[in-house]
Length: 464
Image (cartoon, rainbow, N blue to C red; front, side, top):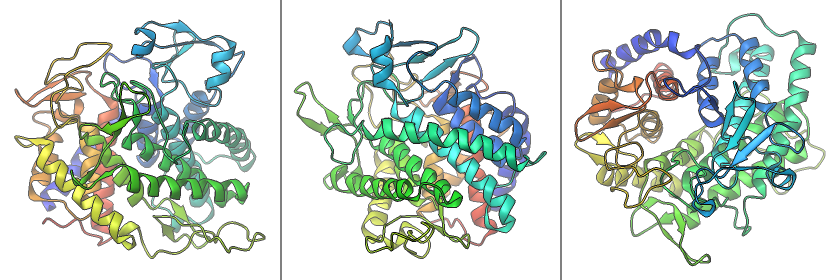
């Protein structure tokens, strides 16, 4: 472990230059993807980037929030329902999408794209969570510097400028939350999506996707924490926390497979009313990260993870005390913690192949719009950015093993540079895709930074 920590610190230093080169994914990807920008901006913030530049980029992304009468918007390129053909969104379509963020912002061509038939859940939700986290931490650091783990550098914002930015972004995020609420079409506390409306944009997942629920939960928790810290719209904050609690419970009840011992997607079949379990995908790890995160704070700066609302709370309360103290985190929820460990154990057994964790447990039979061969792109490959999230989940659930240490050390080794690439072909152990892939670099940095912090705080990541 000491060797990993030493290598991790070296990696953070050696990749620092990559962080601040832009919020696009990097390599041959020149446009801005909102989901990727959320991880990159998070990394900018915790890496000591200029808060003025960070907020400038955040405001730029939110300025492209979908609404009627704005710039050109295309959609449908990733949808089999639209024969993978691009359409230009008219006024009615824009109204249907209003509040969401696009998948992609083409800065040089002055238009945006929704890749699927509808806006992807993760792009909007992850930008809500990152924006809220940064604003919340900015306020906490200015008010009580010792109460937050996040640090930024550079000139501080003047109070009036900070207030202006916050007051501008809060309504935009509220509108985005409202849009996502309506993606729960059958009112079961789980958001539904159509084909290719998440980061795995060739896998053709349609239904209730664990990863997308995780993005939604993170958005609700971080945005609520921000509203409570500001003392604004506490009724909305309470509603959002309740939605987060219900979403966690719904995943636990409806997306847990006792037979397969893991959380797993519920995929909609050709018969529109029927659902069946999909293949196990590595990105279910984000749900484990979401329930383990301690984003919500009380007035004294004490953090709380798995949130519950006190139904008997005094309506006149200022909203800061509405989070019941569950000690530290979801480990006080024995069933969900046990299932998290079971899920990670199942991932180990069924997704890890030859020392590599893959994004899918088996080779995909059908992909689209591109036909993707096995050991290529999203089909049975290793993605460093998602692997970083798995490592974070393993460290938080106390199931970090020697093989994880070896894998992390291999990924961040300067000799092979695996983590600088988009994906890895496990059959040949060669790196492929975009280079340098900033999304993967930033996610790896975020995971390593958290593991270092846990070790320094004596919440040690122990090897089993």
